[in-house]
Length: 414
Image 1 (cartoon, rainbow, N blue to C red):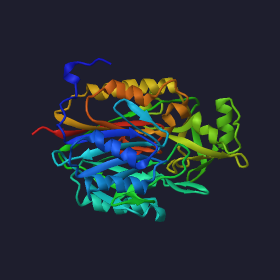
Image 2 (image 1 turned 45 degrees about the vertical axis):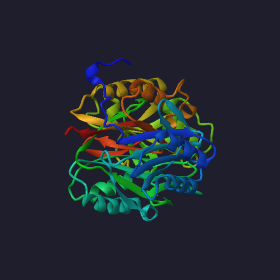
Image 3 (image 1 turned 90 degrees about the vertical axis):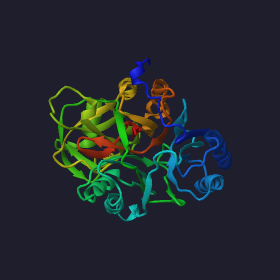
Image 4 (image 1 turned 180 degrees about the vertical axis):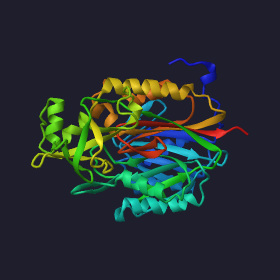
């Protein structure tokens, strides 16, 4: 897409941040290829996302072997993207290398997610609050899968709520995502700076001169009238308007699920809560949508990816619309490119719900490829496929589902 010269974001600080993306079945080889692409630099911190088929300990060791005992943060990803290339085979690796020539974030870690996501968020926030300036940009990453038998997720909503609650009134610009090894929710793990860990969350706190311009791309449309949640227990929605939730959704969608556990619901619909004026014209940015993890046909309930909807909440059934998703990406990336802040953009980060990949969504082409094509080489950009996305919504940040969150980090002019 053509833009005016005033909208060109190519004036990034040179060599302060470098990105690399590579694909290979061998873990050490994929690290070596990324290092070769990064060139002759001396990074002081690495943000790395590694496909789930790679050995995380081997990847961490190879990165430390290449660059010394510097912090390595990030973790597993269902796929990665950069420079017009993307993949979700599990053999990808994407790296952001921060050098001393530009702004470098401070790293804070909690390993307490297994004992309670809210408590872990509070602990992390107390550490962040002591160092972050007001409105500081904070990147937050955590492993999404708490256990697989039975499947239980680390809930981003509880983590983020705990984080906000313990900031002591300080406001930060929080952006982040949940980490997965693959699109089947098989596992997740974190590079915590010093190694590989589970049940962990890592926060990167940027200095005050760094700001973030964030654009959220959606792709769902309402296909029902408003309904009330009349019975809910955590993430399990039992009733909508007094009827079994599964029966209502099947009736509204005009289909009967093929699988007994309702897992195919996640491919076609979400449950959405509209914020602001419920009767205002449709605006995708007014909705918080929750993916449906599965259903229980015996009691007619559905299970959402997050437990943050409440009894009495007014919701709608939202159909996942590929055409709308692609349009949202076109419009969102054009808007991001058109912004001309009085600052230097030095890094773009795209946190993309794994369900938006064409292999899962059925879209005719990759929406992430559209994003990269539109931005071209405007600034170094790295993306990864996530389990949940965290982005500003209203007055504070919250988890979102089936979104693409594009954040452009800028550094104030001297």
